[in-house]
Length: 162
Length: 162
Image (tube, rainbow over all chains, first blue to last red; front, side, top):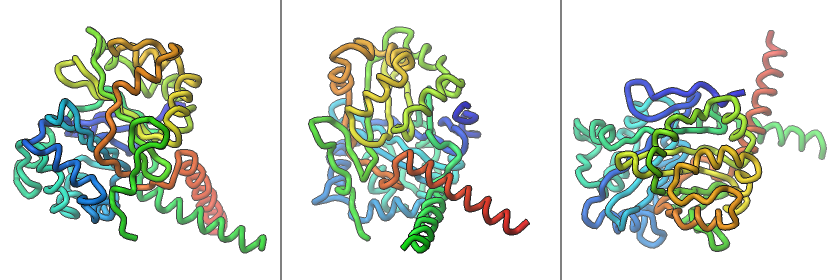
């Protein structure tokens, strides 16, 4: 059994297996960008709505920000469902303020409403050489549904075995 | 329930990386040997042996290799369940040959059976500033179990509505 057909995301960079794709940006940070990124990430000064906002993006599995090269560059790496353009649109329409707060740490980021924002992402995206997902056919919304069903079944079994 | 990124915690013990719920991130930035980038690109994660090998590791959600800086460096980024040491052990005992194939492209890689292999990985690991997981409470085995239950329920409903 292979882990599903793998392909390049249609019309865009990045690699996909099944319905699950990877999106990785490696880009220079703006002056002070590393500090701002750490501040946004921190408990005391951070972005308290961050996780709730991210949970509202129904195509997102995971994401990470990694600062490297003495605070001069960062990696943004995410795992998501479906189309590249739809994914960016989900962020742009769902959580535009959060997008701008976070991505403005990158030098040259034009702003989420800017007509060239997708070109900016595409220009700094690096397609993974290798990509593996353990459950490539299961979207985030499927995981939510499966979890609800499994909990209902467990409640059913509990009811039958008091 | 309002939450913030501080939901993520540093890994217990003395290992690098960030964890939220059950799911941790491991990100390694490494120098490549000459020719290493081409070799990495030539590997096929969807071949039956590679797919089966990684599928056999019950703690990996996803992993990617990203080559950058003109084929001189690479990022290895993965999302996994449980302990850092146990995760490395899973790879070392489960797919040692594939580990050596993938990481053999890295300058200074000592081999998966070398006594200081964990020190080597730890020395190149960079802890993420931010780490978000849509389903932090679900391990890979939970995602799969819930999918089986949901599919069984779907089958049950189909049987009752022919």
